[in-house]
Amino acid sequence: MNGTTRVHQGYLMDEIQKQHTLGEDDKATPVMIYTDNSLLVGEVVTKKVIRVSTWMRTPMVPQYIAIYSAQIIDLSSGGAPKSQTFGEIFLPSHRVVAFHMRPPESDPPDYDPDEPMRRMEPVTALIGTFRFDGFVRMSTQTDLESYLDVIKESFTSIYDIKVTSPNIPAFKPFQIPYALLRRDRVIFAPRTEAG
Image (cartoon, rainbow, N blue to C red):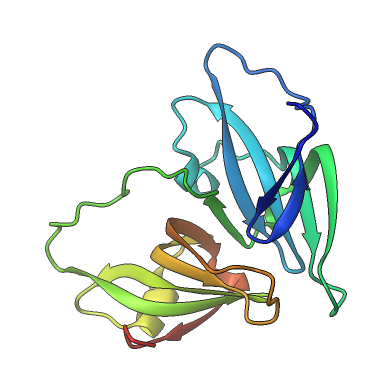
């Protein structure tokens, strides 16, 4: 990389020399990771066979996630977000509240749209200062409360999402096809499709 600066979602990101070398069966994928008080933007390295969009739901996630060319946007100060850039950081995986591939990267859907007795339920998920307006895929026989009580996985999927941050005017809204949310660290609310 050449030391230039680029803008992502209204924040400057210094292009820095990558600290990792890809093996023959590795791939680097740009991601966005949300914790209780920060947003991390960078790249993760996985085996090519790993579907990165669902990676957090697999036993392949290490205890510490290596994030390369990382920018950490600190949202805990209450004022303007503060940003730091590192060539490599290690984030304890238990601190991940939400995870998705950085647009325009995406994987194909992880479900069959023709599966009977399933529907897309509109929801809002609140993750710190971020709002995710999207859809959860659930049985036609249940509601959001029952769905959240029944699922046992740490991470739940949300689809066709508009991500906003009402408290950070510089953060431009964007769309993503898929994200994983740690269900016990997120506030969920039902919404009308227009809401």
